[in-house]
Structures are given as C-alpha cells and as structure tokens.
Amino acid sequence: MAKVKQFANLEKWETGEESPTYSQLEKLAEKYHRPIAIFFFPNPPQEEAIERSLRALSEEDLATVTPIVRFLFRKAKAFQLSLKELFEDQYDLQERKLFWMKALSDAPIPEITKQVRERINVSVGEQESWKDSDEALRNWRDLLAENGIYVFKDAFKNPNISGFCIYDELFPVIYVNNSHSKNRQIFTIFHEVAHLIFKQSYLDIFNEDFWELELKNPNHEEVKCNAFAAEFLVPSSDFQVRIEGIDTNDDRNIYELANTYHVSREVILRRLLDQNLIAQNSYGEKIEEWHRTSEVSNTDQKKGGGNYYNTKAVYLGNAYISLVLRKYYQGRIDVEQASEYLDIKSKSFAGIEEGFLKQGGSNVRI
Image (cartoon, rainbow, N blue to C red; front, side, top):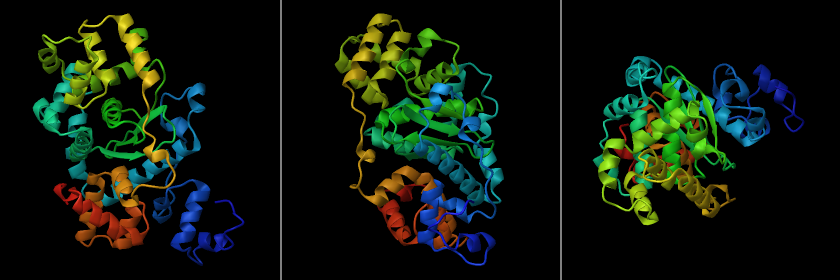
C-alpha cells in the first residue's frame, strides 16, 4: 500500500505496531476506493482487474467503466468473500442450494426456464399475486438467495450499466443498478442468472441496440440471456392465453400485461414480436418512442435525503442481512464483526437491525 501523506502512522499500521481507528479506516477505504470490509480479512484478497474478470468489455465498453463501477465490482468481490466466511463449515449446504445449476447450460432455453421455475417453485399465479413491483423484486431476491444466489444493489451513477454478475461454483453474486426502475431491475436479475447458469461473469452495458440485438445477431450470448429472462418472467404458454382476444396494439393493454408480470413494457413488446402480433418496424418505432420519453429514476443519485438505514437495507437485501443476523444471534460473531459484514459502522448496527425486523425482514429465515 503506497504511503499517503494524511496517514502519518500508515507504516506502523502495515507492520502491526499500531492500529487505525474505524474513522481512519473509512478514510483509507475512500482514498483507495476499496470496501471497508477488505481491511478486516485475515489476508489481502486476490484482486483480478475488472477487465479480466468480466466479459463483454470492448474498448468502447471500457470507457463506460467509471471508477464507481470499478469500486462496486471490488465491493461485490468483498461480499463474495464475506459469504464464504459466513457459511464457514456449511459449504455443503450452499452446494446443495446450487445443485440445480450444474446440468442446465446445455439444455434449450425453454427447458432451462422450466427447470429453474420448478426449482424456485413459483407459479405465474403467485407472481401475479404480488401487489407491486417492489414486492416482486424483494421476493425474487429472497427466492434466489434460498437457491444459492445473492443479489446486491447500489446506485451505479451510470444509467447505461444495468448490472453485473460474478460467477463462482459456490458463491455467485449479482449486482444491480438501483437507479433503474424496479421492473428493469427484475429483468436484469434474471438476465444475470442466465449468465451464471452459463458459468459467466459479465458486465451488462445497455445501448440503443439492446432490444434489437436478437434481430441483428441472433447467436449473441446476450440474446440467450434476454431469451431466458423473458421466458422465465413471461412464460409463453401463459402469455398466449392472456393475449387471446385483446388488442395488442393498444398501449394500455401492454401496460396492463407489464403490471401483471411485473416486467417492463419492452419485455411485453418483445414477447408480442415473438408471437408475430406486432410488425418488426412497429416494434422498433415503439421502442424508440418509449426510450425518448422514459425517465430513469434518479432518487439514489441525489445527494442527501432519504433514510440511510432503509437505503442500506435495500442495497444489501433481506437474505444477506438475515444471514449476518443469524450468525450474530447464534453468538458466532459480535457487533463489530456483524457491522463489518454489513459494510456499516458498528454504531449503525442497531438501526439496521431494527429496520430489518420492523419492515418484515423477520419473514426471512434467521
């Protein structure tokens, strides 16, 4: 670690003669753009450059990978290491949770989606019963965690990046851009699930060709992941029944279908194109129209405002907070360690715990 002027005792910290305060660690983390949890690992983690770890990084894409995205990638790797520590001697449990992923990559997309639906054990009727996209997003994250995949969120400060995933045989993780609409986040999650099924770590950069990629390059990997997410969230068999007899050119019907499945209008429009119920040129025109008029939520991009505890809880997810609290209640870790895993100051632990229990987090098994 290179010496930094404002940290006069840095050399003594490195040799173990002295220890920094938590406040000083926060400043170090900010200076070096590293998650604070990294400073508590027994040994420095092996860091691989984002360019080598994530696929789909062309020279043009590299310009999109801002410092905040690189920081979030390192943060995701830190959470991945934290998961390995939190599971300790329960690797066999995590292996059983992820067993369903082992034999899926060679199957056709419809068969993969069918098997994953059966594993997660959620019917379309249950999916429809969720009152809104907020509840749908929470439920999908919890269900994926129960099946071995943890989903984290953050504000990427870049609307063109939907998210990324980091593959691991035992602890795959997904990171999603919280600045996007909830429906778009849901689609991104299952797009990343497909990458993980194909044993890929991937950075997904949204561009104007995203929704037309299937028409221009049907063999692209992104096409397979889009197809998986669309078929999983809007199963063809159910969709065909729902669209029978309705005017699929009416935007109101598209909105209603999107709300039913808790997906974006673009997903419904693409399913209509699959069924030859909308012309290809009309599809392109409507996508372009929606993109011109759409507004990406910038709630998380504003400085100040909001509730720190609520925001932190949303970023971490109920399942991950539940895992940390379970270890804490079992006496396996103390408040300081629990706070490190949650990437917060120890004085904030009580607020996170209280908010988690008040807002229904107790429904997640702890």
